[in-house]
Image 1 (cartoon, rainbow, N blue to C red):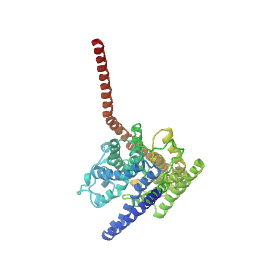
Image 2 (cartoon, one colour):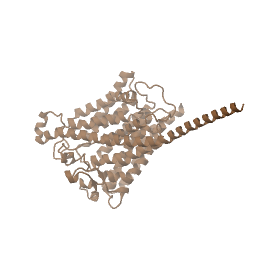
Image 3 (cartoon, rainbow, N blue to C red):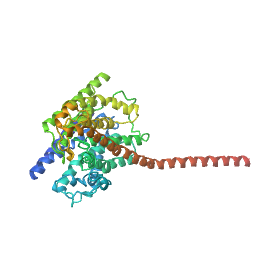
Image 4 (cartoon, rainbow, N blue to C red):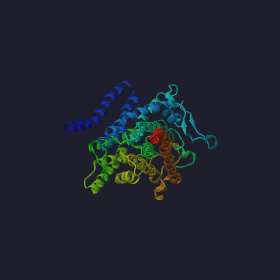
Length: 496
């Protein structure tokens, strides 16, 4: 027991030591670099707290026999994210960003492929086509900062399916799923949402409000959790027994290292705040104090709601549920954090905390999908709700000219009395904004869920083919042996 406590105490110190090292590394860099560059170093380093927090959440809630699988998912996700995004992800993501950005360092990134531009005009970009292998001719200065800023987010997207499936499914299909997420799914999502792609331009092309709006990287969790769901559905029945699994699970999953789960929630909060406060290519639409206030109210409400739920159901507050609820609240309110009324932000956070445990029960007990990292419950459902909330409740106070659209950012359920002072543009944008958000949810679910589901089905079928062939060969060999034994028996009887 003392040894385990010592290990636990050292594990608690890990994130603080990591953050201290980041600060020590960042300050010399800030002193040597130009002021504009130096100010960006520490926030981009702090963004790595987001995937680190997700890992702590998964390790703390995982059975000790499987905790190492969750821990090894982080370096594996990092390696896949860096390699895939370097080779092709950046090009697919930002290959045409120069079409929507006036920054001189991005002037050569003008290759955006679209099959509809000739018929419908510009604004229907699907894939960027410039910047493969970070070609120095076109990727420099601000382009390299884009690469640095996106790496923690790509790692987070890859981490979601890895935390769910690592150690439970065969290695080859898992690596294919993670590589697909890093090289294709996340970059295309980023292109459509932030790289000048078609979702962000729906306000310009078809007049749907401001086009698809996501302020706080909620789309990342929609795509990553969709990939995790696709992996669980495709590889169901092929799970490897890692040993040491719990017997029948209680109504609320146990928290083996609750302090790790709470640490994960706070680390994810810090990484998320660093991300949304220092997003490249995103206009400043909210002050830092206002953003902090809204985020803390949402996460605090979610944690309190989850603790009350655990107290009512189990008779004792569940810290693991509270830690996960904090992340679920960030996912739910992130898309519309500056655009939603404060009351809606608080209610979304509380609902995220209250609904988390029932959603986990729905996924694991009703649908019978083993999701130890709760990727679907924490990431997928809150993401859908948060994205649609922008189209329903945005109040028009912030977001003017977001996505270059000439409209006021308002939702379809905002009372007309509130819209009166906004003018006809705001009224017209209400229903259109909801359509844009719904189109984004559908498109990203197809990208993050349906595409991996189809490809993983093919990989899983090919992966199990040798086993089927071996089984058929063994069956045929047994049949031949049985026939040979029968012939030998007949010969012996005839000879006798």
